[in-house]
Length: 175
Image 1: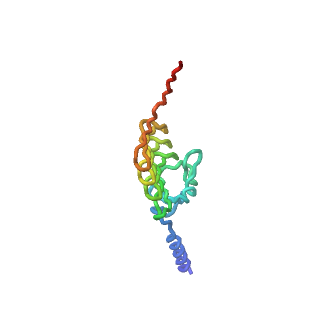
Image 2 (image 1 turned 180 degrees about the vertical axis):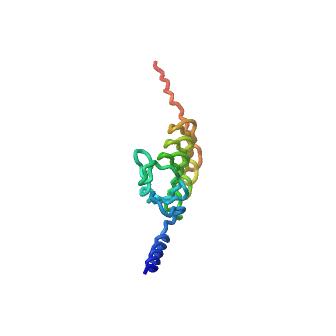
Image 3 (image 1 turned 120 degrees about the horizontal axis):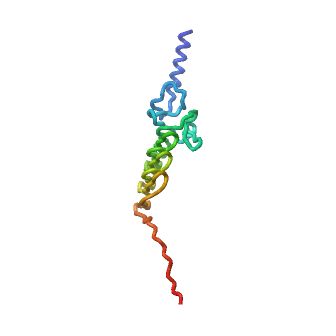
């Protein structure tokens, strides 16, 4: 009787252990934290549908659900595309705010944008691409404020002159 109970417990444990998320990697055996799948110590991988189950915004900061400290680490978001699953975004966070490199991809695998953040504000280079892989624009930011020169392109790769020429009033002949 004792061995049969032990054997059935082991079989049940084996059944639950075999039902894993396909993205699961390096998950600790016992955890009181959120069940977000840990890719490494500070990188979490979730599907787009799972994101809201594991993370929430409180007072303008990102938190893991059931955690009182603002989130720090990286979040890789997975989506399903025509060619299968792909990483749709890769974001770095520090103390609940985006900090460091943040990138997003189109479902065709082409990069959509790449932004640098510092304490939740764009800081550094921001680059955006068209779905065909051509650059759309490159801009510079400091603490969330755009500055300096920028470059903009059409989807065919031809440059767009963004320099605004001053409009001068026309002279009128008054006779």
